[in-house]
Each structure stands twice: as structure tokens, then as C-alpha cells.
Length: 141
Image 1: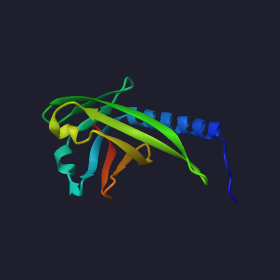
Image 2: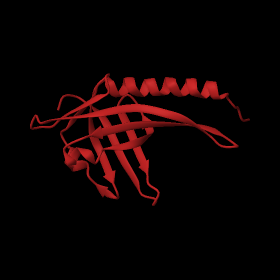
Image 3: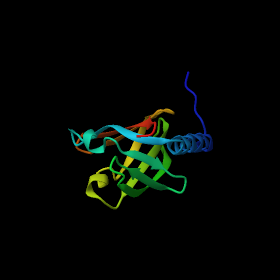
């Protein structure tokens, strides 16, 4: 049995999910437990970094040497429709102006999964490659 919902119901559902993702991201500090870009595992470059997603959209990263990097983040989305289905597209955007090490995270990530302990992000490229970023809740580093 298939059920359909109106566009208004889908948009309301999406707004609730987006708010939950924002609250989850802001609830604690996060660390990169896995980062794959263009088929290359770049996780090691982000070890011992603490990511803090602030309510004002700013993003602060502190590394083990107490160097601090500032960026921005946002959660947004849209409802996509085809003749057969409607689906939600929720994005997690990350932006750093500098340094180049952090700029590799500058993407519009699709949220593939999230819990109170993990946020899993993915980017599908037109050539078939997939980038993955997995953040895990952290205690103090």
C-alpha cells in the first residue's frame, strides 16, 4: 500500500528533520572519524580536531596544537518531485576561507544518516565518484 502526502506535509516534515539535524550538530563537539575525497582517505589530516557548529552559523575547529580555524555551516533543503514520487533533499553546507587543509571540506554535503552520536555526509559527483565525511560525537580532545 502506498501513501502520498501533500507538498505542504512534505515541507513541514522536512522542516522538522532539518531543525533536528541543526540541534544535533550544535549539541556537542564533533571529530572526523572518516573522510574520503576522490577515492583518497584523508581522515588522518583531521585527527584530533574538534568541530563546533554554532547556532549563529559559524563553525570553529580547534586542533591539538590549539590552532583555531573559523568557517561557516548551514542546513537547508528542498522537496524534489517526479511524476511518481516526492522526496526530501537535505544538505549540510560547510565553508572555510582558509587554510587549504580545511577548504577540502567546502562542499554541499547530502546527509545520508545522522544520530545523536554520528553525522554521515556524502557527495555524489557526476563522474561517479563519491566523497564521504563521517563526524562522531566527541568528548574533550
